[in-house]
Amino acid sequence: MVISFGSINMDLVVRCERAPEQGETIVSTGWLTNPGGKGANQAVQASRIGAETFLVGRVGSDAFGRDAMNGLSAYRVDVGGVMVDPILPTGVAYILVERSGENRIVVVPGANGAVGAAELKILEGLLQPGAVLLLQCEIPFAVVLEAARIAHEKGATVILDPSPWESVTLMPGVFADVDYLMPNEGEARALAGTSNLDAAAAVFLGMGARTVVLKRGDKGVVAAGAFECPEVPAFSVVAVDTTAAGDSFQGAFAASLDLGFDADTALCRAMAAAALTVTRMGAQQSMPDEVEVTAFLEARLHKGDHLPKQQI
Ligand code: RIB
Image (tube, rainbow, N blue to C red; front, side):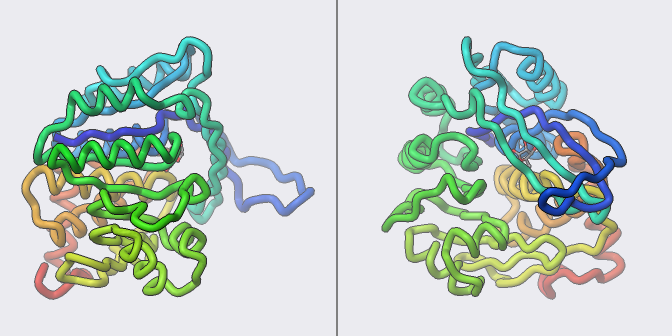
């Protein structure tokens, strides 16, 4: 069982050749709205990989919330743990996607900012020993930490994506209930206050994380802690939109652990899912299912593509 405890957004996406400079006006090449939010995205990817998946979070009583919930149900995510806030609107993310596929995101928390005691109670009721809990930081950080604590107490595995990094308060032992901390490299540098990734990983391990996986986009991942391979290169693909690649990575990693794969194999499967995700536009609709991930891995392994030696 995989549980994602986190944000649900509606993404308002604008495509452009390049991001405008300060004070500059440019013309878009197209726009769309699609359901997103790191919590929801990670749940969708876990479900697409084949794990029984639950989402706990909060939406507003509005059209964006209803659309997001309908989408999640269509992806077979159990949304019984999603509350409807009577006052606050559904969270929104403004996303600019450049022709290169790179993105810039601003989130407006809305109902995500009100996730708290009620959702923690729902989570506590769902958690079982052996469950895998996915956490991100688009809900209040104190609530994230409490969710991790409860999950550990119940014998679950905890995966934390410390994004947006500015929501995170670093303090001794802050990651004591985190089994896998998975920042992207930019956020890891900003959070740890160092440009050296090894030093950043050491900071996070020093604050209690059992393992750290630094996501480096097309440069692959660097893993510190209980992994056989400290570095896994990325699969080479043509990027269309990198939005939610990290969510795809985490969701697929969690689902793979839940399905019984060891952590190193789960990493490779997560890399494959994220690689496929960046070849398509959008967030949840860009995420591959188990059949696609397996076929992609088989094709790449057949080619001897890049994977760590013991995986080939
Ligand atoms: O990680 C991508 C997600 O970040 C988007 O879907 C957006 O909603 C923001 O939460």
